[in-house]
Length: 194
Image (cartoon, rainbow, N blue to C red; front, top):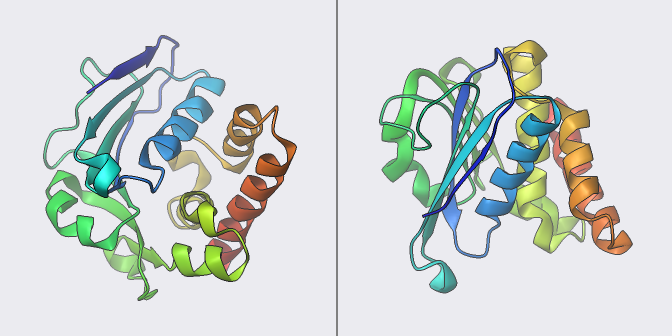
């Protein structure tokens, strides 16, 4: 387990749990979200729990934006879940608050907006578009697009622009990785607007 913190004032408070398996980029997604929040002047706490990540085991990342004292999200307190592996939804749903939302990578793309469940076949979209390694960025783009439209842009601690800047910062020295990453992210955004 590791913990990162950046001290900056903010009025927005959100708790998001990111879940998946080793190799899916759970930590990458959490770090991009954290960098986007920091870039907007928010304080951030993250904590990671690694299972047998090298062997496809569960990886969970806790992300808290705003004035929180500890990095771990308690059961029933998460504002949202980002689930990169559909099978992880069951075990981690207990962290979700009653008014929370879920974005899940699922081949069954039926979304239940009234229930706060939004499904996208991020893996299928990424492979079909030639960005096989960009599943995590497709779901991140879908997340920010779909929830911005449903919840309202003022209800999410970051937006498309701040996430795009975080991606650009991450791949400053690798032009081809940057282009592919932005393309996968934009694919998710477009799909989220449909």
